[in-house]
Image 1: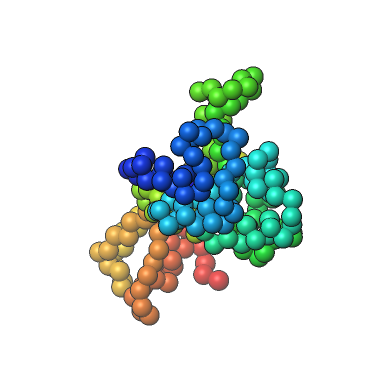
Image 2: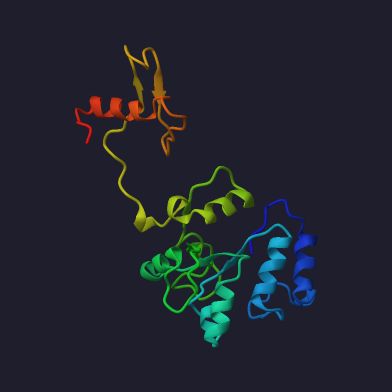
Amino acid sequence: ALFDKDTPAKKIGQLLIEIKIKEQDWGKTDLVCKPPIEEVCALVVEEGGIAIAAHVQGHGGFLDMVKSAARRRAIYACPHLAALEERNPTVRAEFIAGARPGYPQRPIACIQSSDSIRPPHTTHHLDGIASHYTLIKLDGISIYSLKQAFHDPKARIAFPEDLQPSPDHVIEAIFVSGGFFSGQTLRFNDNLTCLIGGTGTGKSLALELIRFILDQRSQ
């Protein structure tokens, strides 16, 4: 579960107690909470957090621990489960597309991260931090921004192997002299530019101007 950094520790402690993890057991890594996973996810969301299923197919992940196929499908379908941690590119693509065989047709975001354990170490160590990571395009560092990214993983979540080399040339802006747009400068965002407007406002004309600059004919 992820919460905003300003979430009081007391609030998280209350959540742990609610899912039947006693205070004297906090910090233990081998505990299994008593309520079903779906109920825990719902409680996390209710308290303003995000529920992510960690290393789902690895040791301790729910796809590994839950032996009933029906239960695995029910957990996967839980609307409060925001994302899965999955490193296999093929499986990841199936989950994101909602096309994983044997599971409901529910697209879900996937991420990858790393525990602070990295060979040759067998215990938690600083060298393990960020050995695996995910690139997420956010408007700001907050739980709200993460939620928005998880709703659109194809556009806003990437893995290191997904990155494409930066282009050698980019169009930063166009200045128009003459015609409908005379005197206008259109500047483009580094990430994504949207042209929005009613009929006749010049959306298609802006694209035609770019084609003209590049000496391309309209199809």
